Structures are given as C-alpha cells and as structure tokens.
Image (tube, rainbow, N blue to C red):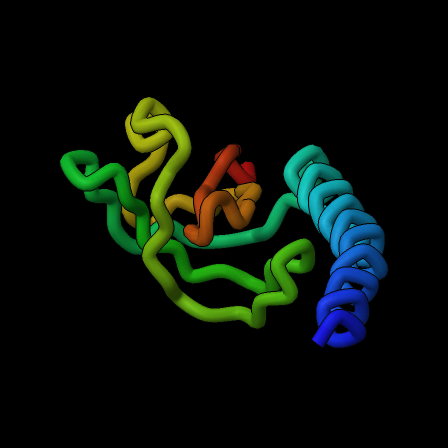
Length: 112
C-alpha cells in the first residue's frame, strides 16, 4: 500500500512542472494573440446598418487575418459611432477581429 502512495505522490510531483509549463505557454500565446493588431483592411460594401443593435451587414472579400472567405455577414461593431459614418451601398474598407469569441468590426473607412 505504501508503494502505491509513494508512486502516486511521485506521479503528481512529476506532473506539476509539465502542467505549469503548458499553462505558461498557453497564457503567453493568448496574450500575444490579443495584442496582435488587425492592421489588414478588407474591402466591403455596406448592405444594412442596425444602429439599435450596434450591427452592420457587410458583403466583403476575404478577411485575411481571420482566414475567412468572401461572403455577406452581420458584424457587431466596437463603437456604435462608426455606424453614423456609413449607409447601405457605401464601399468601405474595414478591420475585423475576433474578440471574446465574436467577430467585431474595429475600424471602418470609406473606400473612396
């Protein structure tokens, strides 16, 4: 019985450094992803603006930083004031990031 307890204690002691190392790498990677700016602007066309829900529907080209193909989809916006600058039919350039599991538009510019 004592050898079983000693074996279990030894296994736990050996597992702790591995767990701490794995957790440290995961935390470091997560911090790096959160600080990496989404500087790539994607071309798009505004299809719908919903100011009450803070959402915008955009027909867009591929979003490189999110590895997303071209499509039309509804996005949340980081700042509701961005929606005052656009109207359906406007050609735009925008940045989108994945924040807390949601894809958020963080910047919008006129495509001119």
